[in-house]
Amino acid sequence: MDQTVILKNVRPWGESATDVVIGEGRIAAVAPAAATIEAQSIDGRGAILLPGLVEAHTHLDKTLYGMPWNRNSVPSNLVAKITNERNSKKRIGLDPARQSARQVALSVGHGTTHIRSHVDVDTEHGLAGVHGVMATREKYADVVDIEIVAFPQSGMLIREGTKELMDEALSLGADVVGGLDPCSMDLDPKGHLDVVFALAEKHGKPIDIHLHEPGELGAFTTRLIIERTRAHAMGGKVTISHAFCLGHNDYLAIGRLLEQLAETGIAIMTTGPADYACPPLIRTLDAGVTVCSGSDGIRDCWGPYGNATCSSAPCSSACATTSIATTTSFGPSRWSPPAARLCSAWKATGSRLATWPTSC
Image (tube, rainbow, N blue to C red):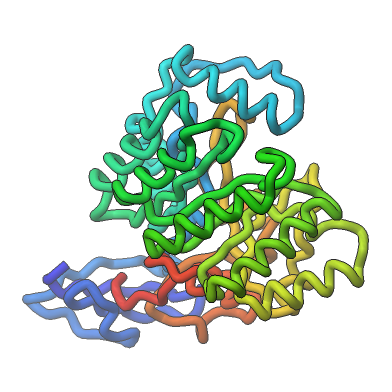
């Protein structure tokens, strides 16, 4: 954006009406401005001006948005849902490029400008999802930043050849190393984390691990992730997604885990689900842990819900009273303290979505 643009009569964060001057793709001033011949002037008509939202956790490659109704009669357990989804993709004609583009268009329409998407990598479908979302990332690069997590949804070690596909995905341009339930899925937490951290070290990438494991099992895995993060000096570059175990009813034990997560610089992603124990938001923030949120799956083989609106449930239920995990050139000082800490999760993970950008 080379042309100067003046947003007239807008209310940043709902405050008093003013003008915002944008020059060379950067917010140059927030103050009343005179119109000039060289500048494009847009009348905001008193609308509230907010920064673009960050969708910190979703699965662009798997949405069924815009496709015919898909009946889901699968038992409500993780492995059954994963297996059903993997087997259904070809049957229902799921095209990752087409479907991810549909969700991106929906998200952008709701004000999202940054997306972190976990994209399936498995031995049955190979890198089809990665290629599809990469095509969407390129197509919409002028309106949204998309970060791809290479995600071993069907397991890393239990399906031979997956770790090689993960390596290939990262070489192709995936931005983050994913992982999934090292104990309950792969039954080998050491082996699983060996692969995840080795790939991160080889490719110089951050890590985002799905951790559905509840209670003490999940707490055990969390302690292993903390230990590995310290050993690899990856503080600020690791996220644990879901972390249901932090909702475990053991106040003192959870307190110790939160202290260690904060000390190590590991971020937590929660969708604030109503049907699972989840991290206690205010206590997690008060411990100094950075937190982000996202829509998770949108109308997929797991469930028919979701509209990709980060400012509404489940995101808002997970992230208290304000729009969450957004980036703005106004900087964190414009946020209420909880919102600033939520937003800083991306800053803590070392990704390109993490910084407070000076572009609009």
